[in-house]
Length: 157
Image (cartoon, rainbow, N blue to C red; front, side, top):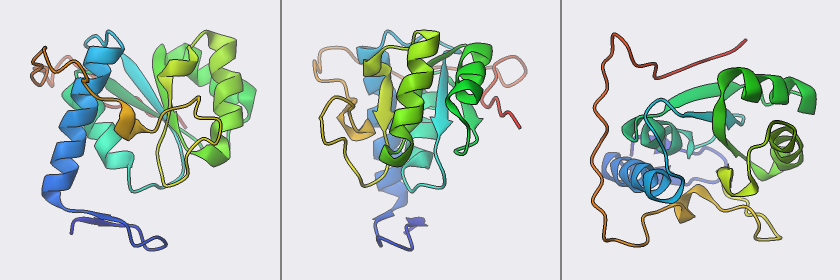
């Protein structure tokens, strides 16, 4: 095991992390018309699923921007707009703030995804594991990045 949630005991091996990373990366490229340097916002406290979403976004050529999970709607909306975020990953506990902030800046509901163990009871917001290349007809490869020019992380404080 390389990742273990101390509360739920859920874990990831290296191979599971790698598989989840690639599955998510191909999923955002096939479902979201994802482009190199598009930004995905992580609006979450510590979560065992964060590495798979983070590395999957980078695998797909994207940039990760991390947001303080204590942000208000206006603070989160500012960072979403300022970073140019195209999507947001959060947990059910912060979903209301994420949805309101995303609406303020024009991020569609299908670009708000969940991580963690809790699911959205309305089934409106997908868990990151549901973002996958369902067509299976397109082959996606890891996007080549230039470390001197391509931004991987865009943290705010």
